[in-house]
Length: 297
Length: 282
Image (cartoon, rainbow over all chains, first blue to last red):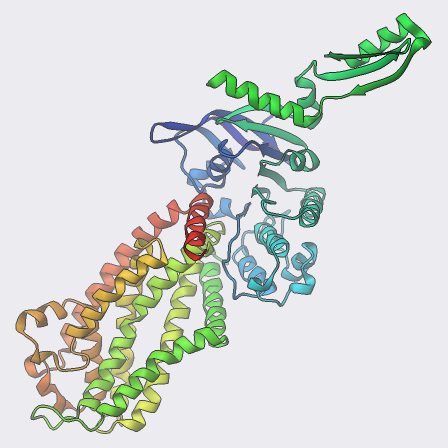
C-alpha cells in the first residue's frame, strides 16, 4: 500500500472461531474513503460475522481490525458517533413516530460535531432525504416494509457517519422497494464523505451498487475487484459464435477480441453472424465459489 | 456540552416521550387501570372488616400496604420492559448510538417511575374516599411517603434491570410471577406480618416488598397502628437500612450485568430470537 492516509477500513488476517469451527480464516482487505464496497457471498459465508466485528458488536478471535483508525473492540463513544450501522430491523420503537424517533436519536449525536461535519442531521431534512415526508408523523408500526427499511437507513445515517455498515439491506424486498433503496444508497455516496460497506447474497445488487465487490466464501475472501475485473479474472469463458460458408461455429476463448481479429484476417468477408457472449458476472461468481469450495474441501 | 450530559438529557426526553405514549394508547391505558381498579374493588369490600384488638379496620391497614406493594412492582415492570426491548431490537439500536445505553436506561428509569406514579395516583386518590382512619392530614405523612417511595424505587429499579438482563425471552419472564406472588403473600400486605410464623417473618424481611409496605403504613396510618407491627415500631432506621442495602447492591451489580448483556447483543443474536419468536407466534 502506498498510502494509508485515507484507509477507512483496514482488516488484516482476521480470524473468527466458534468452538472448533473457523467461520473466518485470514480475511484481509482495505476500504478507502468514499468507496462503496459490497461483501458478497452465499448464505453462511461469514458475512454477518465479519460486519459485526467491524461494527464492534462482536469480538474477534485473532487478527487486526481498524475502523477509522480505531480497533472496534475498544471503540469509544466518540468513535461510535462516526460509525453508522443499519441493522436488520424487526419491530423496535413501534409506538414512536418517524420524525420523533429521528429527532431523538439525532440528539444523542449533539456534541460530536467536527469542523467539517455537523451532527446530527436535521430530522426534517433527513425524513425528506429518505423519502418519508408523507409518513413523518406516522407511528413506525404502521409503515410498510420498504418504508421501515428507509427509516432504518435514516437511523443509520442520522449522525452523519463517516463509515456506514449495511447488513443484507434489501433482504425480503420486492423489486420496487429494492430499486428505491438502491437510489437512496447511491445518493448517499454521491453526497460525499460516507464510505459504505454492505453485505449481500444478491449478485445483481452488488453489481448495480458497488464500486468494488469482495466475494467471501467459506470464511475467505476469494475475489476482490470491480465487477469488470472480477469477470476478467475468470478468463477463457467468453463464448464466440460465427457463420462461415453457411456453417455455424462456436468456440470458448480467453481472448475473444483476438479471436475475432484472427477470424477476419483469415477469412475476411466470409465471416458473418459474429456473436460474442461475455461471461457474465454471475458465471464468474458461481465458478469462483465452486473453485473456492473445491480448494478447501 | 459534555457527552454524559447530552446522554442524560436525551434520556430524559426519551422517558417523557415513552411515558406519553403509554398514557395515550388503549392497550397501555388498560394496563395502567387494571390492577389499581382491581385493588380498589378489594379495598371496597374490606373497608368495614375489623381485626385484632387495635380497633384498626383491615381496609385502613391494607391501603398503604397495597401502595407499597405496587411501588415494588416497578421492579417487574423494569424487568419485563428490558426483556421486551432486547427481544425487539431496541437495545441493539441503543448500542449502535454514542452513549446509547446510558440514554436508553435513563429513559426507562424515567418512564417506569413516571408510569408508576400514575398507577399509584389512580389507586390512591379514589381509595382515600373509600377508606377512613388514615393519618393524611399532616405534611409529615406525605413527606414520609415520598422518601419511602424514592428509596423503594432506588432499591427495586436496578434489581429489575438485573432480572431483565438475565431473562432472554418474554416467556422466561413468566417464571418470575410465582416467586413474586409468594413474596407478596408473606410480606404482610393483606394481613399483618406478625400473624405469620417467625421463620416466614424472617424471610419476608429480607426482601423490599415488606419494607415498602411498612414504610407506606408508617406514612399513612396513625401511630396506634404500630401495635400490629414487628417490635411495635415503624422501624424507619431498619427500612432505610434494608432498602438502602438493596439499592447499593443493585447499583453495583446492575451496571456489570447490563454491560455484559449489552456486549453480547448483536444483529445475528437478534435474528435468532426473531426466528424463535416467530415460530412461537406462527
